[in-house]
Length: 113
Length: 110
Image (cartoon, rainbow over all chains, first blue to last red; front, side, top):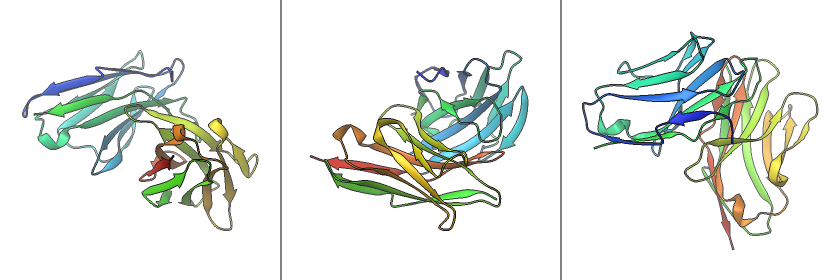
């Protein structure tokens, strides 16, 4: 158990819909990362937050947004969903220090029909 | 800029044989290097981490990796493969951000 909790574990929805994925980081970790993993694109970095502030942005679509709340949990919002958004979405957390390892959650599997 | 390249997206070994998964890094500063493993339908787990304390790093499940600055490599090895080692393996380099390789799928043949 990494200590990182993601909900929901599975989600099935239709094209055009909006979903929210939630992540609770490990106790004490200030930094949260979001990744998308699909068969054709591998593990793609989406966005990173540190103590409530956006720190880095990767290949995140404009239809996607995220935030980190004062209690340090984070949410990833995916809107106007397309078939191609079907993927595993991982949250990871770290203390935030350079070189610190990431601890991954079990992921949220999104299926868009 | 920092990056890692994993050579070989698929590796097959026989049970009991040596496992060698290759990773080369690019970094303008002394790197922090990691190997993660992902079992089916699970998140990534840390196997081992290099932070300049020692060039040979031992990890969990009998895996180890050697940092070679002259070759900019951080290859992962295990002397004897076990069926339970079948998984996806990711190399990563970290500075201000984490950069993951494209992964290597390890198949162990009984």
